[in-house]
Length: 99
Image (cartoon, rainbow, N blue to C red; front, side, top):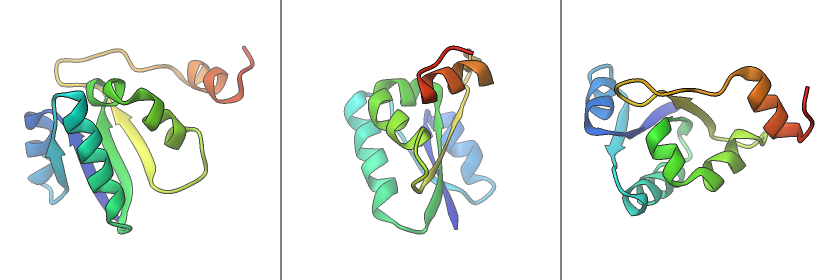
C-alpha cells in the first residue's frame, strides 16, 4: 500500500523527501485532476490531502471520508495552520446526529 499527497508545493515537497509521491495543486481543477490521478493507481491506499485542497473538492472528499471504501483519506492542516474539525464534529457529520 502506497501513500499519495495532494496539496501546496511545500507540502508535496516535504512528503517527497520521505518517499511519498504526490501532486501540487492550487486551483479546483488542479485538485480534481490530482484526485483522479491518485485514484487511478490502486496501489494508493492512503491519500493525504491538505485542508485547503480538500475544501476545493469537499463533496468528493467527504464521500470517501465517510465511507468504508478505499483509499483511506487523511486530511491534514494546510501550510500555515488551519482549523481541523474535532472528533465530535466529524461524528456529527458522518451520522447526521448531534452528540
